[in-house]
Length: 392
Image 1 (cartoon, rainbow, N blue to C red):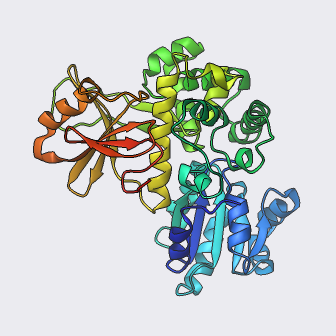
Image 2 (cartoon, rainbow, N blue to C red):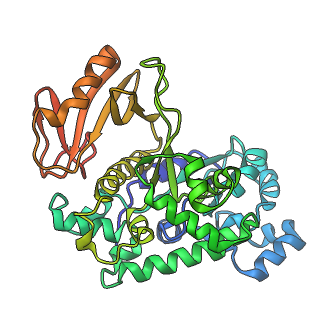
């Protein structure tokens, strides 16, 4: 139903590398995409216990039974197979697109890949749907307040848009349970899943905010070292994204802690306790959720084009900028506001940034819930759902 923006990058990698790793969180559409897009490849699901036993017992014979071109889905279940793939790839190094590997646990896969398949594999990360991907199939007024609340409540996992009769709370509850039981428990690093779930809920409450790990650990009743380790798990399983502070010498007192964003706002809303979308717009969480919505849509858009540019936030005693994105040697500056009324006061932080950054800056964007872009007082007023290079 949905045409994924990263298709062009995937096809380019298929012609450039002997192997491709397609990674991302559960239920973002990895399997659906590769089965539809790579019909000439054999498909092997490595969650099957019998197949996993075959790999452990005799990996060479297993690879003989499934010659390329082949898809190994949920490859993180058999990471040791990577070293055997290396010799197969090297024997036919000029043949591109031999193996497609998918997985939802980044660090388990990448530890093996960096050791065995460096230089032989193209890595692609797939996230939940972008606004553009949904808009191609479903007509929505993305700037309307009631639509915006529904979007925040539903989130961007493909299944929830493929079948809009599914109640988002039911789906997110099931997703959370599956994530805890299949991903987190299998990592053997979390003994108490109830404490970890409480930790995840506390992280959701902090989406769009500067992270204080010590405060998070105190509220979760765990040690700071455990909080940091669990936070790493959320990052490595694609549930959250951390944006680091901008470090250039604008001020000696800039913040050093990252900002945290849940990669799916619908899951964040569920974890916050929202069960009715009409309650979101008037809540204190609306601002951080809207910022999360905008930032994650930009991240998904950039990733789908093949490379995520360096991006940071900036906070000093006198200046706060939500996002700074490197554009070649300059910086594009983004301020995110949920208001529909734009005045000179709304642009105050962007004006300060323009003076501070001087010639280091390229473009200045105010991302807001409006329908069309327009210039105002030297700034770009940009609808939140349109990446700046796209037109309405």
